[in-house]
Image (cartoon, rainbow, N blue to C red; front, side):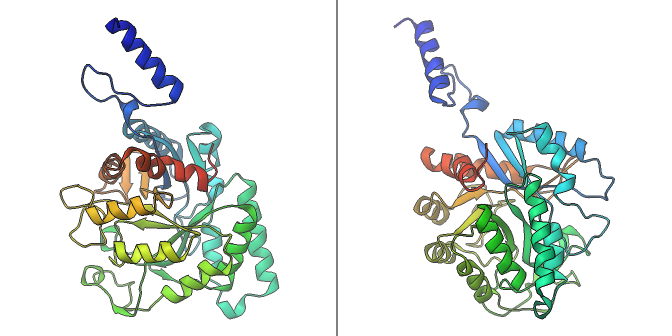
Length: 356
């Protein structure tokens, strides 16, 4: 076959089959990478006058650079209407401007209600207000509910005022949320720093005064939430790099085997020797994690926790102003076998979040 004709035929095959093909003359085209869908991102909130439009341009630029086809923007799990507060109303413009590239979620207002309402004070009137707010979020185009916080430790690298928050996972409003989300077919994104049994606060977290000296066990209440409504789907964020280092592969395997409505999204800001870290300090995917992903290829997604700002990635994805966490996620997906890479990189997210 004539080389030029063969080259053109190969290009046509790539287009028809939707494949990303690297050209034979060397190098790797950006199109040859498995596309990614990042299901957990934020805008950096320096106040309600933050320039979210400029932050969106940063996000789109990084997405183009790293082969991220679509991102899911959401508010962080705030516990009060502080100056940094925002919810889905502040994100709608991004999805309106870039449908198919940006999807949005809401939930900080629901998180505030849960954390400020003792379980014993959840009346029918409180449930009605909660449901009304849930319906308002859904009406604005939410593809899921989140980020919701069950247990969120305060990280010294994030500053002394980085929130500590804790509420029982089987709080009545969380059980109501599970029912509401199941009825609408919407996943719930959860920040849940796992404490399998009571433990002293790790030394690395002691500089922040907001953290308690002892962390209370929270696994049993979480199990009750997961079983309350089997039709509710939960995406447990930040696996692969989390501060308590409690989600090691064997434990993750047990949770996935037991709860078929549980999914997990990877955040891999940097490698760590602990088994709970998915990547080595040198940037390779650890064999135990590769084996686990291959055992559950339909249950993992990527969720960088990047906070996009005017000048770059503000935090949550490596050093301030850097995108190292995003690049580690790219390396994780690229390390997987092709079919598994497509599932973890984008197909699972498209299915669970019903993305266009």
